[in-house]
Each structure stands twice: as structure tokens, then as C-alpha cells.
Image 1 (spheres, rainbow, N blue to C red):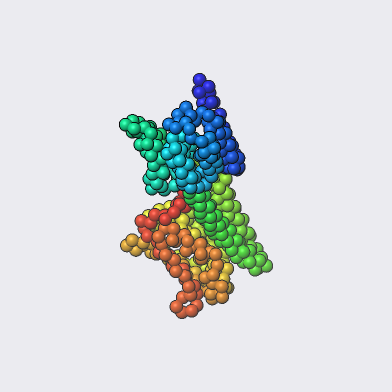
Image 2 (cartoon, rainbow, N blue to C red):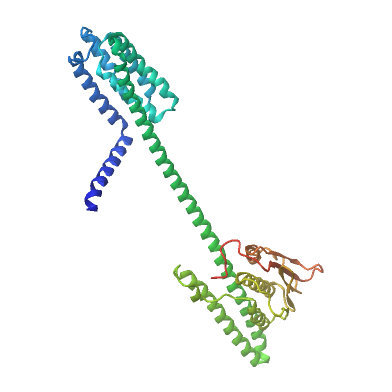
Length: 414
């Protein structure tokens, strides 16, 4: 039943769509066909049928033919210049009514009237009705006597109906165009949101990859260098360095697998199945790994650890990790580092400093940019630069204890 009732309407909609497309592609074809059709009809009426309604059948036939052409040929330009077309046709209609011919072709004025209501400002309709009703009133007063109002009223209602039809079509068209424009704007906005979200996601993934790979490779490099020097004098220490390299490598691989696994997981995958991210409780193992890489680290961590949200704890962990990685890379031999975490009234203050010599490119890498972005995500601030003494480098992070992520949180997945 549903198919039988909807199929005709669907067919009609497709037909209308095709007709509109053909008209938009070749408007002259439709305008020419309509004009030719009504011109033939007007000339057929001019051959003698006009006398059936004429008030004065003695009007010259030549004048009737000229008036019939004047009431039909201008229709070709009705969509481009409807007001001008109506003015020309109204002049012919005035002669028709005043002479008593009362040509029925005068009702063709409803076509340009429709296009005025459809495409022109509403005030144009007032002038259109003046042009339309002046001939009607003139003919009615001259030939209809006491019943003049019947002719005027019927013509007035006909013209009002056409004007209202044009206004209705215009309102529906404007409403549809507004809906289409709104849909397009929403689509553009959604595309922009998707692109921004994708860019943000790429930046977040890049930060994670940088932190994971950069830190662990730096630790592995330090262990390898220490193992090479210890191999000749202390094979046991070299073996310990190799064990530490293996442990660090496996940790890096585990973190990368976890990150890539979340990226490839379905969107509806349960969050409980996702591996947890590093927290403040993992700082001790991080510091121990750095010490094994050959960098002496002194730490001052409160007990118990401050109750930060998981995402903020990940931020603190990554900032400490990146800071110690930079120390391993750039501080030079003999450098030491210190990590201090202090709980203040409304914030947690993390300070990572070293005694190395800052390099010429210190503070210009992507790692520091990533740390600042992480801090800003949780309404925190990050400052870094040389120590006042000129020897050493310091990174200072302040993050509110009641911090909430500004955008998509990082505590649910890497």
C-alpha cells in the first residue's frame, strides 16, 4: 500500500525536478513556447470569437489583431522585465476596454502579475493593480452602466488570487532556500569542526609519540653509552645496562602498542578495556629509569601524592619525562637533576632543574611546545629557562588541583 501511494508522488517530483532543470538550462525555450501558445490562442480569438463578449462588435478587425499581438507577444520577457511587460499589456488592455472589444487576451496580464509578486518588492504590486484595474474600471463605467461593479469585482478577485499565489510561491521558495542555506552552513561548520578536531587529535598523538619515543630512546642511548664504557672494566655493569635497555625498550613498545591500539579501536569500544595512562604513582619508576641511564636525579615527592584528575596527572608525568629527557640530551656529562613536587593551596607546583650547560637551541624544540600545550589544557602554566646563576636549566609547571580539561580530556585514552 505504501509503495502504491508514494510511487506516483515520487514520479511527479522527479518530473518537476527535470522540468525545472531543463528550464534553468534553456529558459528561452520555455518562454518561446509559452508565448507562441498564447499568441496563437489570441489570434484565433481575434478571428471572430472576440465578438461573443464584446460590448461593441464593430471594432475594426485590424485593431483587434494588433491588440491581440500586444497582449501576447510581450509575454516572452515576462520573467526578466515583468513590470515593463505589464505596462505594455495594460496599455493594450486599456484600448481594448475603452473601444468595447473586451478581448479575453487581457487576462494574460495575470502572467506578468504573477512574476511581479514572485520576484519584485511588494510595493510593486500597488502599481501593478493600478495598471490592471484602470482599463477594467474604464470599460465597466462606459459600457456596463449600473452593473459596472460586477465586471470590476470579478476582475479584481482574479488578479488578487494570482497575486496571492505568487506571494505564496515566493514564501515557500524563500523558506526552502533558507533551509538549504542553513543546511549548507551547518555542513560547512561541521566540516570545520571535523578538521579542527582532526588537527587537534594529530597534535595530541604527536605529543604522545614524541614523549614516548623521545624519552625512551634518550634513556636507551644513555644506557648504551654507559654499557660501552663499563664493558671493559665491569662486565656485570654492562650486563645490567643491557638488561635496562631491554626493559626500557619493552616499556616503549608497550606504550606505543597501547597508543596505536586505541587509535585503531572502534569508537564504541568500552573504555574499561583501554590500558591506563601513567599517573603520579609512576614517577618513581620514571626516575629510576633515568638514573639507570646515567643521570643522577634527586627527587622530592610528597606523601600522599596530591589528588589530581587522571588527565592532569598524565600532564605532570609527561612534563617531568620531557624535562629529564632534555637533560639527558643537552645537559652534558657530569650533570645532575632534581625533581620537586609541592602541593600549594589551590595548585600543584612541579619543578625540574639540572646543573648542565644549556645548549644554544634550548627552549626552541617541539617538546617544550608540547609541554605548554599540555599545561594549557588543564588551565596550568609552564615556564622554562636558564637558572639565575647561568648554570643549569629549570622547568616550572603549575597546575590547579581542581583542573578540568579545556577541550577533549586525555585521561580516558592516550
